[in-house]
Image 1: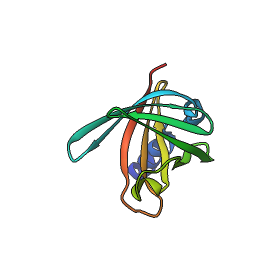
Image 2: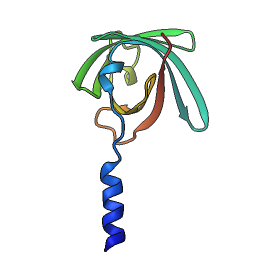
Image 3: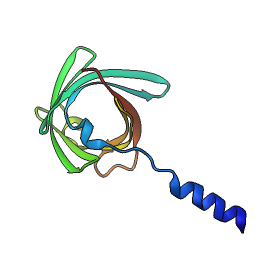
Image 4: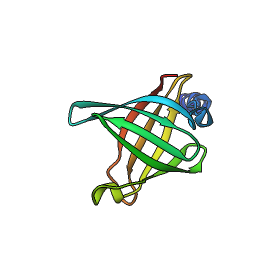
Length: 120
């Protein structure tokens, strides 16, 4: 019983840092691994718009914050059916200059994770 109380006390004192408001705007480098391949992009975000450069292409999306740590992206000029789907992104943890996130299409249970690092 004492061991169980000690474990519960330790777990309850551990708080994951989540200073999401620090990352609502800025310029970032994002890294996502899919099927053992590392994908990197660069994006700039303000309170309502995100512009991302990936493999020489530039895409823009409107940003709608659901709460301090979650947002919805809607591609402004979708080129295909997949780009018409909105994306939900949730910031999971933060550090001084980076955050780890989870994202996926709205309504899809398949989620992926990545990390974004502030570059300015």
